[in-house]
Amino acid sequence: MSAEPDPFEVLYARGVTDGLPVVPPTATRVAAAVEASRRQGDELVALVAPRLGRATVEKIAINAVMAGCRPEYMPVVIAGVEAICDPAFALVGVSGTTDAVAPLLIVNGPVRKALDVNSSTGVFGPGWRANATIGRAVRLIWQNIGGATPGGISMSTFSQTGRYSYCIGENEEESPWEPLHVEHGFGALESTVAAIAAEAPQVVANTRSRTAREILATIARSGIVIASDAHAGLGDTVLIIGPEHARTIAADGWSKADARQFVWEQTQADTGGHGVTKFREPGNVKIVVAGGTAGRFSAWIPGWPFPDSPSSLVLKRIADLG
Image 1 (tube, rainbow, N blue to C red):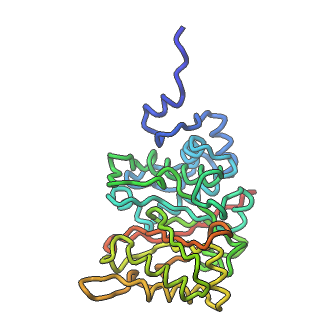
Image 2 (cartoon, rainbow, N blue to C red):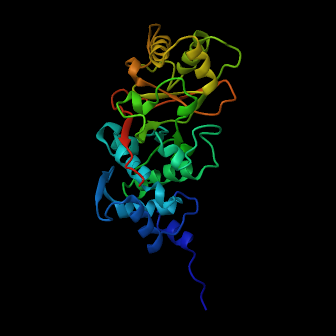
Image 3 (tube, one colour):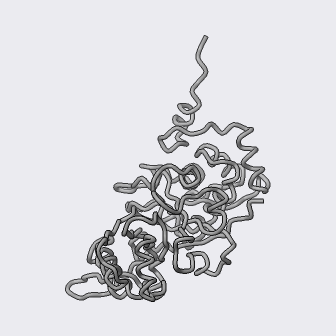
């Protein structure tokens, strides 16, 4: 008697995994995910670049199940798909670039608590199912529906682990400033997903300084090397400020706008002996407070560093979980 085929090996052979084991998308599991979305399975959510595959609710659910999502994560996954498929995200270019960018998802609002999205200690690391599987689901959708297969369309020279999953929450409770989604016109009690084409985190340590100016000057100097010290005119990039740094900066009376303006002015690129601002304008520096409350660290999350073909931060509202 021949053994039953291993579902993972079958799916791996079909090229629909990310190399790690996936959850078999049985009809029962997919139906539960579709039901949790409170939308019809055949409803079209987006056309996913580069091949403009049709991301229906059911196809999104199949990939969410394979990624290990709980059914209740579906509204967040759907909003993430809407975000990366927005023209401002420039998914066609991101799909084929040789750079090492991946869709970073930033979750804001009450949904963080409802779904246990990690915003605090170890925010970029393992241990939280929501972060790991929501980010993974969006990546699988980009690959399986959009066709961005590694070594095929996706030609990243190095790639990065964010292409397995790249999803965090903003630590709104520890932030002295308004959160990202409120800055962008959403209500504090609304939930959103922001997506940006992002490289890996570049951690900045400043454990001794006790003034806003000193901390932000260290952050600015560290930002000079994004892409290279000669790259200027860059677009959207995320600056994660850790809660300890944020408290010190705010205690000196600096608003988020003050911090952004200072970092923009101080982050200079050397273009043949002439210092120019690294980013096109202050608004390209997207400040988010995240991470644990212990540790005087911040981090640059470089965006896609090509001024001629920019990818912008895109925010989408998450439908009510019900």
